[in-house]
Image (cartoon, rainbow, N blue to C red; front, side, top):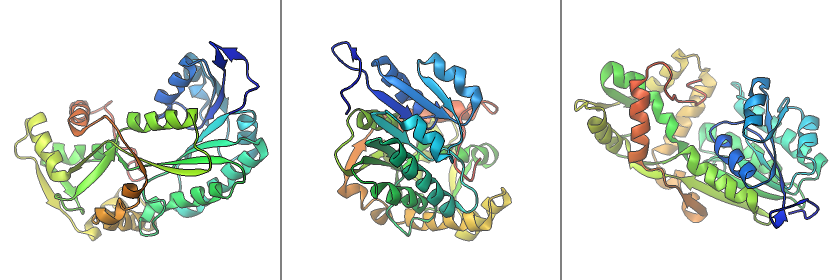
Length: 318
């Protein structure tokens, strides 16, 4: 870290620049960095977020995430930067993420920043991971940077993805999936991911490093059993559907066939957790504090609030 900063409480004020506005990760990380006395800039593409960013003590920078010059100007002088895919990919998700990776790499080179934390994903290293493999385009380009420390955070699926089941639970008292209900899957809470982001920003390991994050592991069967009690819905049950049915459901919701097929390929890997989580079990893994019992409480609130409750935020559900 640089040492040419003003002194604050016996230490140095560090400068951080973060993408992602005040989303699920930023709303935790940004206040923590500010409260520690640091100089924090938050990049957003939405000018309406400016006041909210100022309210937490950070400086807003509004611009285009595809503009490498804009990003380089914001990165310049930062002790560490936090990257994430801040724009919604189109149907050509691989091409889009490759382009975003080039933008990130160019901005880092221009700015001279030496410490980077990048939010990637499980599956970024696996060509069989379908849509998740898109993240490798960003990782690969950041790995090529010379004399830059880069920490990749690869969380598993977000708990919030499970909110996608609310409508069928209401309508049919059922959860539909092409992944067998007995398979144990791992899930991550944003606050647990944010804790890892914060830790790494404050001390980016030398070189290139990979850090996995998950909060809990459970099967859909266990999820249903827990919801049966929490929602007072003893007849809540699982309905197995085929890959073809799952793909058609996505297409019916406006997802392109090409993108839907990538999600199906991801599902195929999810049916083999020993393959999906193989690298996770061999790398640095952070196990969070938000467990199934905690998430189910939030799920119950979302279920009861039909208009303003939390919702799934995957490409399929946007």
